[in-house]
Every structure is written in C-alpha cells, then in structure tokens.
Length: 78
Image (cartoon, rainbow, N blue to C red; front, side):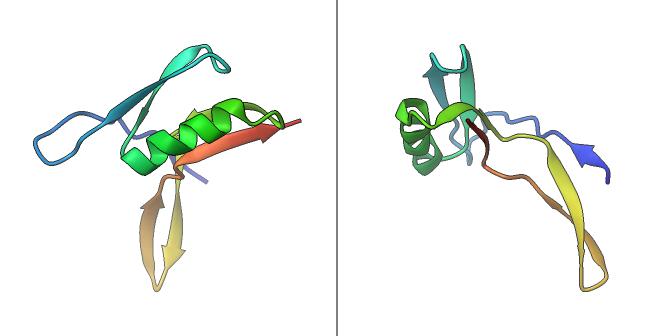
C-alpha cells in the first residue's frame, strides 16, 4: 500500500503548535491545541516508549474513491 508524509506549514488559516519532547528527543509539530495537549499525556505516560506526530499516511478506498488518511499519532508501548 503506498504511503505518504504530510509536510505541515504555517498559513493564515492554519495554526501549528510545537511540542518539545524529552522522551523522543525531538520537537514535534502538531495541528491543533487538542493534539498539543495530547502530547503531554503521551510524554508522561509510563507505558509509552515513544510517539510520533503526523506519521506516514496511507490511502484507502471508499465508495469507489481513493482517499488519503493521516493519523494524528503513532504510539509505541512496551
């Protein structure tokens, strides 16, 4: 199945938020304040080893159309 990665950029109509993660040793870019708040829960949850915002998306077929979908997060547990 073909995969793709979204390139998030600021615009006049889209606000982006940056979350500095010690668990992942990186800065994550998310699209909403709700996703930003979720980063705090993921960062401090002991069962979560690492997480990634806006991971690779994929295409699916619905009613004869090929549609894209990008999950908000990919989470790895131990």
